[in-house]
Amino acid sequence: MMKSKGNRTKRGFISGVIILILLLDLFFLIYTKYENQGLPVSRFNLFFLGNILNLFFTFATILGMIFYALSKKSTFSPAFMLTFTILLSSALIVAAMSTRVRLPLPNVYFLDHPLQKIAEGALFSFYQYLLFLFIAIIWLTLVSRRELIILRSIVNSAALVMLLLVATFVYINLKKDEGKKFTPVKNSINVAVVLGAAVWSHNSPSPSLAARADKAVELYRKGIVNKILVTGSNTPGEMSEADVAFYYIKLENVDTSVVWRETNTTSTAEQVRFIRDQIFTKKNIGMVIIVSDSYHLTRVREMCKFYKIRTELAASDLKLNFQHNLYYKMKESIALLVFWLFAL
Image 1 (cartoon, rainbow, N blue to C red):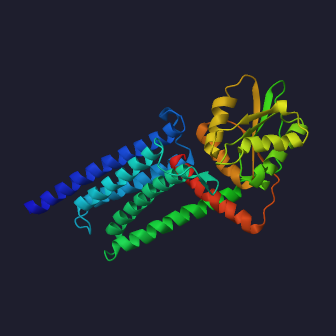
Image 2 (image 1 turned 90 degrees about the vertical axis):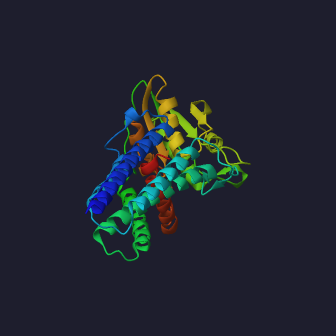
Image 3 (image 1 turned 90 degrees about the horizontal axis):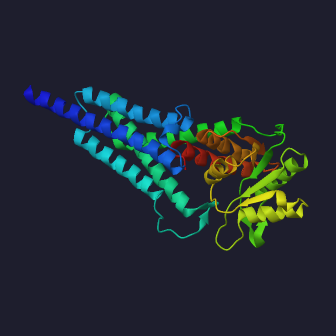
């Protein structure tokens, strides 16, 4: 009897330690998300979908641990649960450190993203998968048969990842920004911001970059904007995305004195952050219209919500066949989910 009581006390104590660690991990993740984007944690927005997801997954784990502490039997010992929690926290710390140090990776791009950024996303995603795996282990231990718990947890965690990606894909398809009408702010600087896109061989704009630049020129000629900002750095051995867009617009007989260039950003998040830090801080800024392809604008909108900046969005007239449209939307689903969860 005394031994049983002692075991329950030990289980309850270790469960309490695990819950404390999980709460610290949550606070550290939120701090990292905002610090990475140059925002104080005081800007935390409870109604931002990514923050809601962070809170939900953590509290699902904590609730499971409470029931685990109260249960009389379990497939896994408290020591196993604590070890897994330490592994989870370590994965989060390593992922956070990757955003602060330059990883020993070549300066090359893959799928239009630098390897450094891909590695950061992969490390945070690994942490998130471990959290899903931990949730599955806890709840399957409590409510299901005890055979093949680890294998079933791995499968269930993978299924949860797929479910989130499908939900994100649906969300992207529900948001539309084509055909919107804009009203420029009188006696102000109204800016069309062309987000960077791939540069093709011989420093020619990809169809995506050309379509974005064309839309900005259209807005300028209609008198909706009086300035154009082109953004984006370069991959090794080629001209920057901003410069390629600049010279493309120049060939459209647009006065280049109205075209601003930003040549250092390497991602959409950095470009939205540049808008916040460098455009909205200028005097007499009226309306800012971010121009990108339709499939991309949902993520841009979510980034603007995260930064709490008010911008308009304009979709380019880029036409994609079904296969390419599906590919880009699947790619955007991954990128949006990563941004929601980690602000990367």
